[in-house]
Length: 122
Figure (cartoon, rainbow, N blue to C red):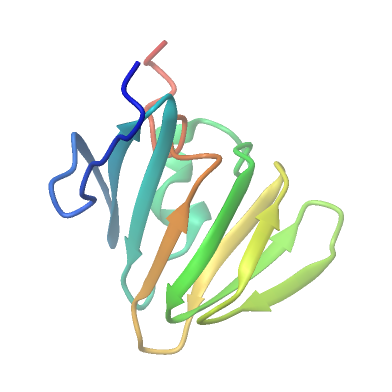
C-alpha cells in the first residue's frame, strides 16, 4: 500500500444524477468521499426518495458544508439548519432540503458509498 494517496473530486470515478442535483464520488485509500451539489428547490423526499425506495433517507452522513444552506428534519421531529463551514453528523432517518436560492455543496465522508443508489442495485 502506498504511503500517500491522492484523487481529485473534480475528476470523479462516478457521478450519480437525480432531480435537481448530483453526487460526485471518489474512493481513496479505502474511503469513499462524495461531493453533493444540490440546486435550489432540491428536497430529498422529492428528488432521491424514488430511487432510494425508503420513506426517509437511511444513510448516515458525516460531512462539511462548503456552501448554501440545508434544513434537515429527523423522523423523530428534531430539526436543524446547516450552512457554510458547518461540520455535520446526520443519522439515518431524515428528510432534507435546500434553503434559499443558493445551491448547496456538501462533502460527505460517511454516506457517499450508498447515497442516491437505486434500491434495485445490490
